[in-house]
Length: 439
Image 1 (cartoon, one colour):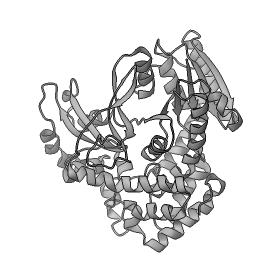
Image 2: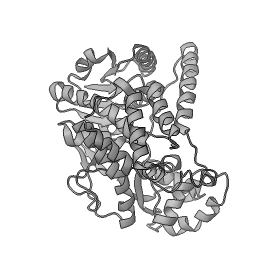
Image 3: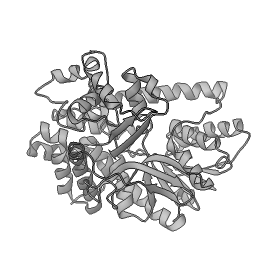
Image 4: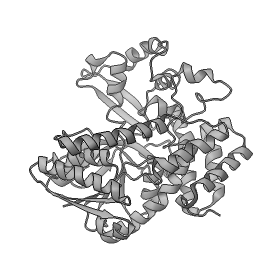
């Protein structure tokens, strides 16, 4: 069996996912095809993964494919394709996504999922995915595409609506959501045997139900503990607790992400909100610089002392592949098309995050029904931007980029229409060849 990793130069993530596969008997003897367009990063991944393979007793085989000219061979015959690309990397594209809007007074925290940064990231990534899809339809038409790249809903939604590739989007936040909430509210005694239901959209899926092992609803106790945490000046997850307070439910992704998914918290007219809610402006650039430096150090140390044995993580990818290969049922939170009205009060064209059963026949999304009306309304503010951004990528019409930016909750609440258009024009110019031409 062949498992292809697109964007294998993301060495830390490739190490985790492929290391997870090496921990699974059903997957460990696979051919692991590594693809990237950066020779140096690809070689670093090869070195690390070869060392891990030897630690696991020489299981499987590592193959490397460099550059677009070898992409089709990397994909040929694959049963599973993992996507973790970052078009334009931190430098220059992430820097552009932050610095150009900042000139217009628009501040961001992460800028990879929504907001003007998420829009631009989607517009430079979808054309690359279009090429992936074209190749996959030719050389591995039955493969399952496991997308980890953000903006999750835009990229997965594009693949699901406009290509013939079987696609599920995967995020890290679903499997840690309720554990994070209960731990930060000092309710660790409720973790074992808990039951939960999570549904919505990526990075804003709602913890709709949370019960202890005896079936007792935990939300009343959760809500009774919120004010104490919100009053703590050092507490970091305030935005999500505010969601519980004002909308009734906790959501999957962190407060630093969710601070920029709405019009409430990052406001130039109310600068005091930044300190009040501990909102880390420019957080993603800081993380990128830190991770780049940390990886250099880690690689140097591993080059001297060797690679430690990998322990299987809680990432979904290997569990999905294992479930399909062994016909052993497994449940995930997956990003899938809402075409069967899985969430009945969200659009059929939306990419939604819902429970999915995985077995020998693939990934099967579960019907959830209607979200609480206020949760669906919050999701729609994001879905509007996602759908119009996809439309911009497909039609190459600049007017749709303008419209996506205007309808973005944070951008539209801070800037007027003329300024938004000027900012979009500046971003397009700054990104240069990383973007296709728009009419």
